[in-house]
Image 1 (spheres, rainbow, N blue to C red):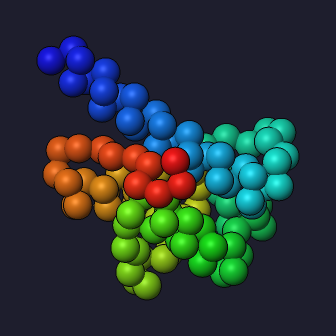
Image 2: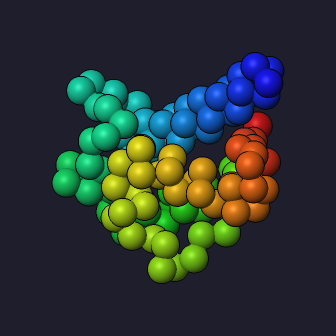
Length: 106
């Protein structure tokens, strides 16, 4: 049981790392000062409509997801925490009970 928990926690940590790395590299252009996972990307002017579409394309390619147009909303994309939660929900819908990372680009 401990091995299963360690595996799931490791997968979740890797998923969060990939989301955070994408945001830092592509939206923040490598600048990480005073930026945390709860920070609003919209309020800070970091994420606009073009950035949202690029982010969605990344998530779909990286994690093998399909994100519907009606899911491209602030509640899902406004922070790293929100993006991470969206990915976890979408992955769980594909494979219930399992967090799986790195479908593509790994």
